[in-house]
Length: 186
Ligand SMILES: O=C([C@H](O)CO)[C@H](O)[C@H](O)COP(=O)(O)O
Image 1 (cartoon, protein in one colour):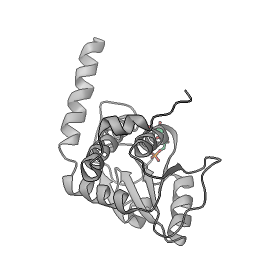
Image 2 (image 1 turned 135 degrees about the vertical axis):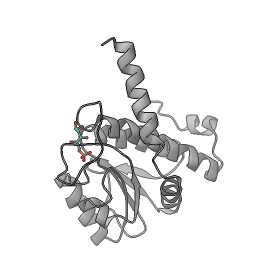
Image 3 (image 1 turned 180 degrees about the horizontal axis):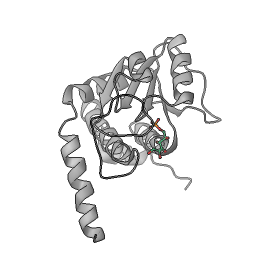
Image 4 (image 1 turned 120 degrees about the horizontal axis):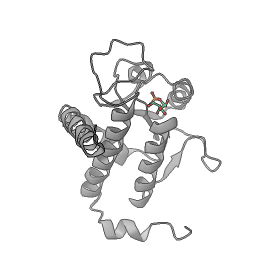
């Protein structure tokens, strides 16, 4: 099949799946991020790349944000938000970190395919993204033309950018103000 046709098929798939993401879940997450004292983000593999990209924009907004596991990341505590991106909601290291974060009285935010996953059951706020992943043993009705969790990871990126636009509006922050915070060591 021609690559341009494949590209169109992927975009069509994302459009259809995104039409089933619930607006109120996104709005709840915007509120949670805004009220969090500090934001700690986490994800593994491709979901981890999305979490890092998200942390970059949260920093541009002027929020205090850390990536879990980085050498400069301090301990999490009460009033902080631990925001996890995990398609399956079952990745071992993330389950352990979420458990620790909850013990430390942090709130747990989650972007996932499965609200009923281990992470989903612990989360205070969840955004569900329709997708498929071979990493879950839960019943999966959803299919994808792409391998593994690709559709989830692509949509997770766009949902994170949707959260950023929502936060920009609530915080009355402009793209110009954000760019002033952009790294000058690059
Ligand atoms: O890298 C990944 C893999 O290629 C699936 O498409 C996942 O992002 C990684 O394995 C983490 O999994 P989840 O926590 O289920 O997102």
